Length: 331
Image (cartoon, rainbow, N blue to C red; front, side, top):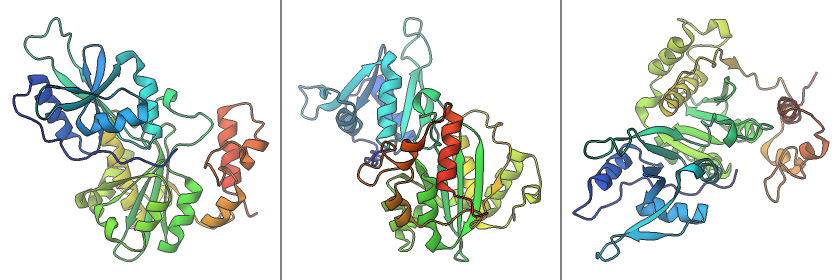
């Protein structure tokens, strides 16, 4: 995945005398800060303001404007509704978060303005649509929680398969583990932007870093979210300490996915503990130099060691081979 581009987060300042549809657009945009909003209007998805400017560059769309005769014309771009899959893939690959707002009723039957609602919010780390995923590769969403004790909780989840893992780390180990996991997206507390130890780690990994409000990381609430999801009152059955920093990271991650998916996550059936040292520890720089799964120059799978030796015949086989290369066993 390429280096994430900056996604607009502020609600655009709109001119006066807007149509009801544009007023609804601004309302939905306020409800989905940090997302590029694809707004269904008839047979097209329309983008406005800074979203249109950013997306026109990523998608190769013609940038036009609404109300051209006004002193402040609104930047505008769009594409046919049937082309959503291809354009959505390009936005996600570029590292953007996308909210899709659909028409909830037939415009011909609507009384007044057509009802529109966001039906999905798609982020690089929460993809489940097979058409948007590379079946040969894992697509992890990670969560980083720097606890007050100095330990860093790290959790990662592949939403499409339900694999869910957590661990506790020393801060110095975080960069190596993120390089090993290669998450497409990582959520973290807002205050991490001021943490001199960890902020540079997220900045140099090239993933989409998603800040979350402080209340998302309340330890008891995160623990309770896991208990509720798994139908337990303890995590002992998973061989996990319920008071660990990794549990807070895992709970915050689970709640984020529930918020994004708006659907059942019953396939996430267990939480795995990760014990650092069960596989050969390869530091970030060495991993990059070896080009195990990605080349240094382009950061792509092609021409890496994995690509050269991969003679597997199924997507699951390709994933398993990549797992073995990234985590060589020590016994």
